[in-house]
Every structure is written in C-alpha cells, then in structure tokens.
Image (cartoon, rainbow, N blue to C red; front, top):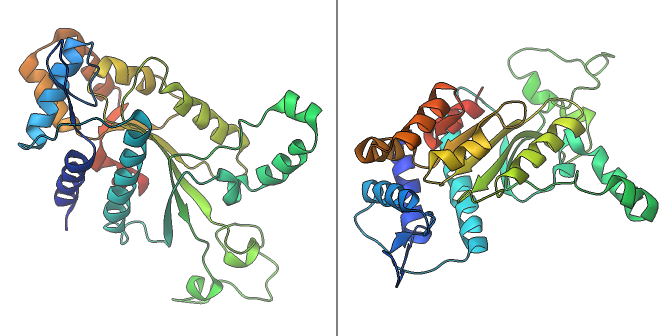
Length: 286
C-alpha cells in the first residue's frame, strides 16, 4: 500500500468513526470539527468533508472522545506510513499513546526527580510537576545490539573501552529504555487557547532533555487557517503543524475565496509552518 492509499484509508476511518454532523435547530447542521457559531468555519469544514466523503453520519461525540479517536487513528496512520520508509530510516520503532516521557532515555532522570518531589511538599510547590508530560503520540526507537551493529563488519569490540555512553548501543542503557524519536500532539480542533498546551509541552521537551531533541509536531483537523496560526506561527518550540486534509482545505479555500483565510493560508504555507499529514512520515525520517 502506498502513501496515497494510506492517506485515503486514514480519511475513511475518520469519516466513519469521528467526523460526524451535528444537528442545529437554530442554524444549519455542521461537521463536528467546525465551530458552529462561525460561518466561515462551518463553510470550510463542509468543503473539506465533501471532498473526503459522500456519506455523512449524524451524531454527537464529546470533545474528549473525539480527541482520543483522533489520536488513535493518527497513530495507526503514522505506524503504517512510517513503516513504508524502513529502507530510508531503518530502526526498531514503537508507537504509543499518552506514554510518559520519563520512560525514554533523554528524560529518564525525570522519574527520579518526580519521586523526590512527591515526598517533599516544599519542593513540589516550588517546582511543580508540569515537566513530567505524556504526549498524545510518542514514537520511540529501541537501542541496537552489538550483533546488529557488527552485522556487516566488526565495528565494536567488547574489549574496546570506547562507545560506552551512546544510548543507541543497547549495552549502554537500562533494559527496555527506548530513545524518544518524536512527540506528536493531536488537536481535533483549535478553540481559544486549546493549542497552547502543545507549546508548553514542546518547551518542556526542549528544556528537560539530556541528549538528542525528538521531533516535536502537532496534527490538527481545525478547518480555519486563522485559528491554525495560533499554534503554527512562530518558531523555537513546535517543528511544524500538520493538517489532516490540507490539500482538501486548500481547494475549499480557493473555491470559497475568503481573502483573510487565504492570506493566512499562504503565510503558513510559504513560511513552512503548515504541511499535510502525508508529509509527516517523511519528515520523521529526517
């Protein structure tokens, strides 16, 4: 299966399990990734949905459930699509939901700090515990055994005093510890400051790491570029924001021809702050 087919399968799963139409007695019905009080949001959301499916499901899904389903479906897409790139980015990869960063090599010291703080109220009030986060989706890479390292030719000798600290070598770190390769925040919609915790998590990952910085990205189904901009604009924290159906959103915006939304879309695209979900597995291979 190629990336185009996986993207189509991803959209079908979203339309079948998540993207439902909410009935509105006072206004027109609208897809549940739209803001029912915003005409432009509803118009763009309908345009995207019409390009993804011809079968609409009416219903209501709570915000918490919508977020969980979005995380699960996005994880499944990434697992299948990134696997296609094993020849480009080989490795033994793991994909998890809501797993603490303290379980990965760059952040394993945080578990010890957390234990100390739990038993010291003064430290807890001073330092807080916001640093011990569990991102929506994490991708880890398992360390490599010496057998695998030496598979083609002898690179490491057991009697050699070198290569004793890198976490890529299995013998150097505690068992079952992986290296955090990517932290992915999933936002079904972006309302008010809902996306700002993704920035907080990103800064946390940057400040508290010991070693390689993982990819830090966000995935959203928010239909309006002006709201996506609240998360995507700026640099220094999140690598990039990925839209679940960017090409369908672009076509919709050109059809609607809303000047303010098109202007913001162009800023995000030309500034390389917004990409399609199909770009994400390739970016993770960098």
